[in-house]
Image 1: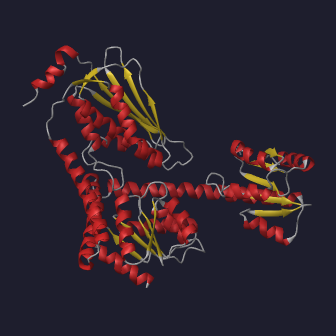
Image 2: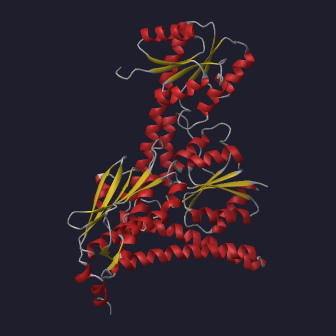
Image 3: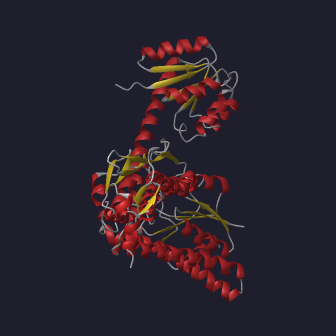
Length: 388
Length: 129
């Protein structure tokens, strides 16, 4: 076994801790110790034990409270806790198990018995973790098969998106109908709001489709790329925060004015940042602290570079290949599959490039590079010449 | 008043379903994913759950199984509401059954979006009486 099982021994009695440490070491376990409840909680975080032996009567925070806190937290609730105490009476036993302790052993205890229980609970923990992994894997497969392979990815995802809108519309219409029948103005408003909101989603879809199909020349203007990036961060801050995702700005201070199409680039960045947030939302690894980073960089040749990185779910080769394909989306019911395609189109119309770097489970970075454009010759004058 | 919990990651769907729930005379509770859903179930003890399948964080696949293998919660009726076909959902539950070594029953009802809202209302009435 190259990964030794880690036992955290928590007892205010130094002798007990010493004795148990020696015995468990002799059996090939790795151990750590804590002498009160506060230390115990800290040790659980730092040491990440596989099993906890927990005394009840301790100074500061007692064993009951430690157990309650550990079992109440998503991060630590699966670590088996064996309560260890001199109190062998039934009510205490019940209390121990009632607050979520997995097992109970009364002092003075037989060391062999304790050792057996440790072995048993370690095995249980491994089993549970294994199953959780399998379930995650299974869900992933189901999503993949339904989303991508089974029906042909493009039409299926668009259909899925429309199905959700349709259900919303039907619900709204139903409420309006009922409200009219009953002369109920309150539900009339509710129903109508739903109809409007879902009509909005259809408009969004149609706009995306139009944007994609139409030839469009960039409208160049002198503007500040950092300001565009800043505005996009502001717009997305709220929804990111709601999911516990932090947006970090890293703007190049040497970036001054540049000649680009601010509206077009704003759209591109907004799309990339929203995607990055979604990548974090769809990430199944909840131990991560999700971060979306927006960088700007003035390159030596005057090119403007924008980078949007996330540490969300990332993409595998398969998804990467389909990224810039129309209607391809990995977002359940929420994506039209056109956002990235439109972003690419706008960037290319600028004579720029968009590239992606991604690792499944680790995150993605999208980079937009827009070549230098001279203010005098191709600046505002050019914008004018393109009109009409 | 009987309580109906809707678990769906789509804001609009949650809103629609909650409105239909209130309209039918029940109290509406909402959750955005499986983890939030399980929390609300323990907290609010709903009389009926309307559950989507594909959601970020914890999906309806896992949540349904967790729910139906929990002694104290397994009797709460569930209506699945999803654009994913029923067949696919049931297949996933079978596989989970094998892992867990115990089989869970099929949901009380399965609605494939976009179903008529009336259908959902009638199902709620039928299940909750």
